[in-house]
Image (cartoon, rainbow, N blue to C red):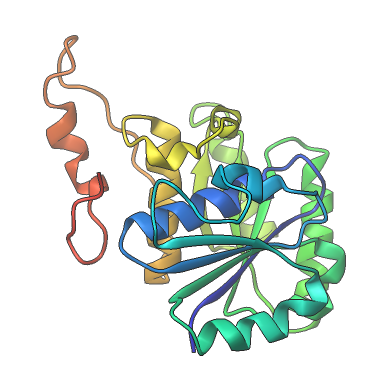
Length: 235
């Protein structure tokens, strides 16, 4: 059975679609064949990320993007398992949790750090737990200096499985996903979250600084972030 990851949020604007795209891209860049499904009811939001009308992706042949309704997910999962894909990432509306919740091998809940967003996320967690699903969490708009204590509190109130800390998800709002550009901190954070998802871990992300004002040593320090579980270099 191939991994089926549902990505959702408690409210619009939290970054679930951006997260779904960048997790899928990160997995594809690490050598996995990935099907990315848009069930978010936002017309063409993921097809636009692909850059092509048919859902093929110019920057990696291992990723395929398509649109579908939530009720089509069981059929698509069966077809994907009998096909060539190794992972399915689905951007799903939280209101349809009873449809996709039991299909998923993992659910990722995206929430921002704003106080108004936490009750919405908590409501989704409660609904998922009612059907036996315990989601992982991606924290968006996370400030490592300001939000560290709040993030620790969320690990007790929402879940202790936080797989990603994204500081500036808005920087990925371009034609191509930010995960393609390893020199950006946001890209490294998405790739780190994808490794946590792939390995079933919740290792914290370590922010590293250049060893000198000229940045020498940066590439050496962060080189381990460029490797997937198979020790293959991600370009």
